[in-house]
Image 1 (spheres, rainbow, N blue to C red):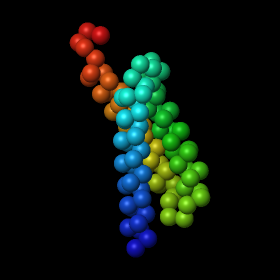
Image 2 (cartoon, helix red, strand yellow; image 1 turned 90 degrees about the horizontal axis):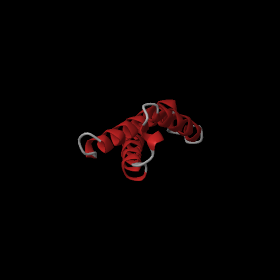
Image 3 (cartoon, rainbow, N blue to C red; image 1 turned 30 degrees about the horizontal axis):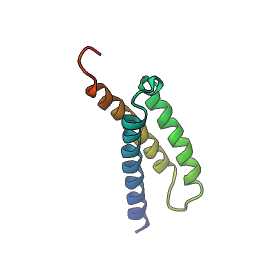
Image 4 (spheres, helix red, strand yellow; image 1 turned 60 degrees about the vertical axis):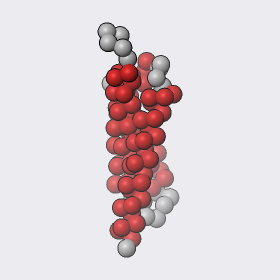
Length: 93
């Protein structure tokens, strides 16, 4: 039973991490050049993994795998937000 609860928590953390990161990059960081660099998804993912690891140490059903999954999903959300910004630009810009 605890395995299923842990899986649901991990999936929810990944979904929230991805959607929030994508929305933040595509809406709030649209005009920030540093957010459009190639290293931004990696830095966001590593930072989210570290922060998620700190939170995972405090919660009983959440472990390092959940923190890693959260970090990967945030990095993918940032990359997806960057891609949506590039698609919205006019051709030749």
